[in-house]
Image 1: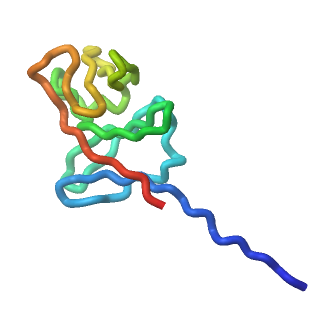
Image 2: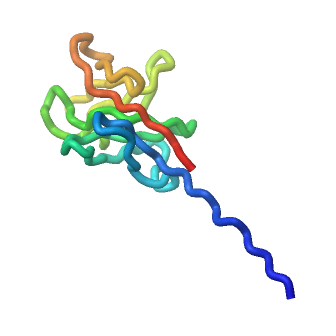
Length: 119
């Protein structure tokens, strides 16, 4: 009798670069395209992680600079002139997911974190 065993499937993990280095956020399969999740950073801060409908991952600071609330992960995703953004669920300001710039107020930005998929 011969048995065949398949190598275990590699699970893609989403990692985020913080000032302390790369750390694993979650399995990529746990993210829902078009929705965000809040992530606690090693330094105690928060990031909002998004997976767009094309499968690209983004991470920005979760704190809405206009209200001070940690809610950007609950915002709505969209695009303006080809630039992906999240709109704050409170006051509706839009933040570019690639640069962190507020599209509605040139003087305001949120932190941006580099993300990568491993595995």
